[in-house]
Amino acid sequence: MYIIGENIHIISEKVKEALANRDREFFMDLAVRQVEAGAKAIDINLGPRKKDWAEVFPWIVETVEAVVDVPLSIDTTNVDGMEAALKKITKAQPILNSTSAEPERLEKVPLLAKKYNAKLIALTMKSEGIPVEADARVNIAVEILIPRMLEIDFPMKDLIIDPLVLTVSGCQQYCPHLIEAVRTLQYAWDPPPNISVGLSNVSNAVPNENRPLINRVYCAMLMGVGLQMMIANPFDQKQNEVIRWIETKDTSTPLARVYNKIAERIANSEEPQMEDFDMSDPEQVAIWKTTQILLNKVIYADSYLMN
Amino acid sequence: MPIEIPKDKWPGSIRTVTIGATSAEGGTRAKTVTVGGGTTMPYLHFEAPTPNKPAIAIEIKSRKPEDWSPLLAEVWGAAMADPAQWAKKAEEAGADLLVLALTVEDSPEDAVKAVKSVLGATGLPLIVWGPGQAEKDNELLVAVAEAAKGERLVLGICEDKNYRTIVATAMANGHLVQARAPMDVNLSKQLNILISDMGMPKDRILMDPTTGALGYGMEYGYSVMERLRLAALQGDAMTQFPMIVTPGFEAWKTKEAKVGEGIPEAWGDWKARAIHWETLTALALVESGADIVVLRHPESVKRVKDAIGELVVA
Image (cartoon, rainbow over all chains, first blue to last red; front, side):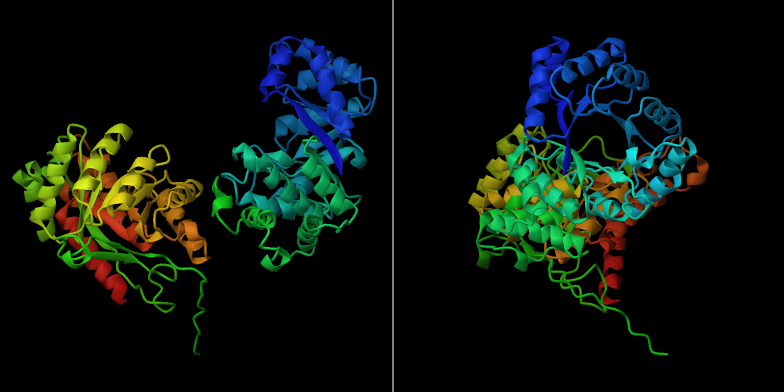
């Protein structure tokens, strides 16, 4: 699993404060720790920075590249900011995060990625919003995103399609469709595009104590359909463990078996069954319940584990 | 060619809930109202019968409401100033049960007096709503719950920000609760979980998914009701509660029902329109699975009652 570390994100109060203070040590430490925890790239989302982009984007690139060698994922909607960051990159091939199928963004961002030899994350989203249905998202990739890349002769190996994870709390019906979109996208083109998702979005607006469980169960499901790249929290040890169990087909413990079984069921286009779980183990019961909300079988509620 | 109608068989069902208690059951009601029990989508008689037909509640208030439509004031007349009189007229108008809505002006003593007078005036089961301000609701409903212990009242309205006190007093005094969430399946279910987790028996909860009037978001309301019903039938224990909705309150808020002046002539007769608005809102909700509809105008009550009669024998 290629994890793009998500932790330099302006939504965090600590990041906000460190940025206000231009606290280089904070960002260096956070970048180094993410790489040590297994992140293969570092996402940098400081927002659009409409006023100070010309200073902030080069500054953060210089700061982070001073301590890590991995690719940086420049995560912003500000095209000028993207370019300011790209100009400053000296190490690994960066990732631009992101374009969408909205005409204005699709016009500019891929050209920028090409000019600076960056990989490009492209969201399956049009101006009118994100479609629910898996097929509609795949169609956006095939009919809009990929043709645009061909048009500008952008290398397919550098294209990363993001079919958009939405939260189980409020957009529950999207969760199973995203799994199917990841499955289908791999057959959408030859050579197949890379696919990445923002995993933790699945538990946005979920009470903090339940977020990691939902993230790692969804991760297992998505690995079942072949997901190999995601923007996620590399510090989540239990999630890393699940990834390792599935990647190495480690079934040496009951939990490892359960997560492998979930991935296997989803891989075979089956639903996890109650008999896959040891219902005398509360932890496995919680995992079972989580599969049911993520497949939109049972209505999500914040206290769904008490249900 | 004979056509076989495909039938669904669901693993889950709606809980059966009884409101009100007769003297044999520790209360003073002349009759009780039982709702719920459905095992399929509403009125698919070829799959399963409708075990309990939807009930109609008429909403009355502890004090004469000043903001109700003149059409309602006209039909209820002087009875609106006296909850006992109003309750009697509502029973005559065909209500299966009553909603008594308390007001912010009521003291706990006023509230208890109003509830007692309504219980004394009719034998119908009773739902009591607080005025809708958390502190006041708790103050009044606790007093009412204690004074009417054993009557199996429905106490409302529980919402996510204020449910604990109401649920606790309902549990302690043998009453039921109405659990309202703002047109959202996730929040409906969450509130039901929280209330159940306090120990409230599951046959003493009604869920109120909130609705809108015809032309004012009713379709969001009935979509939520449909999803809750489907989840219940699929076996989700925390959505298997009978549903109570308030089409009277919603319909009489609309300009179309409330106002007779300053509107296009093409809208036609005011009274006819207003009653249509309430009736059609209520009927759409009945057809999407409402177990109790709370209405305001006696003519709407009559029409909805007739329509329910046809639905359940169809």
